[in-house]
Amino acid sequence: MACQTITTNSTLAADIVATMTPCIVFGADGIVLFLNDHTIDMRAFPSGVAIQSISHAQVRIEGPGTVLTASPEPTMLAGAGVAVSGGSVRIRDVSLRNARLIGGQGISISGVSGAQFSTIRHRGIP
Image 1 (cartoon, rainbow, N blue to C red):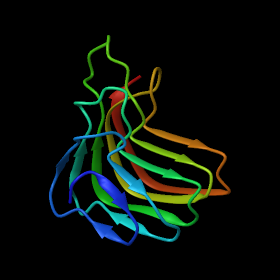
Image 2: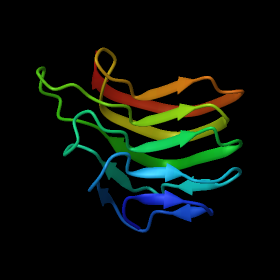
Image 3: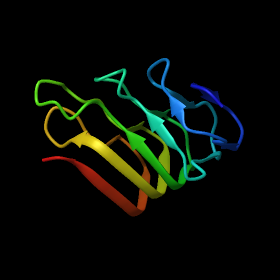
């Protein structure tokens, strides 16, 4: 699987080095992205988004898995590891690495009708 829009349940079979941003886009309601213990590497896109959902209901991101955002260099701005606007989302067992709390987010949520999180690990920059 490479960077793409998904419209059915999808499972990563290997690590992904992003070739575009956003890398994985939810294109339908009620689907699941299984990270399958793999990494989405966004370091080539310092202000990019690894996983995005806009106005889709009941989408899920299931780990274990890792989203690796921009380089931890202080001059770099980081994008969101996961960006959700509208709809509803459940995110479970995901690690966020190099995500900035200032100048970028590990998870960006806005205007959702419901969000559930469990076992989110952050190894980033304060």
